Length: 107
Image (cartoon, rainbow, N blue to C red; front, top):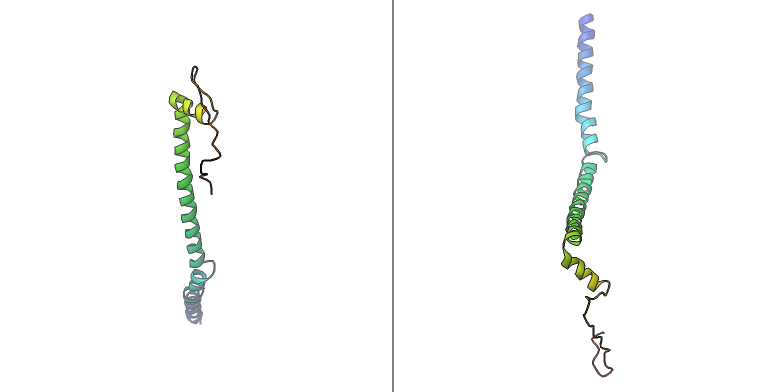
């Protein structure tokens, strides 16, 4: 009798393992939380990685510009002239108004 219970228990265990292996595992892998979710997350990771790379490149560019503004007098002069309209001592600036007869380049 005991052997029958042991065999029955072992058979039941095999059936339960079969159900798990052939029904539950594939449904979990192929279900909405399985491979489709993995693919979606992989795409999101790729997108975020590309964005991170763009930000890293921008940070490097800005670091270079900061170093230039700290150390390079010609860069400081360029900013002062272009953005602040400053001139060197002794320079003369001539400003011409566009004549009304000249063709306009704006469209």
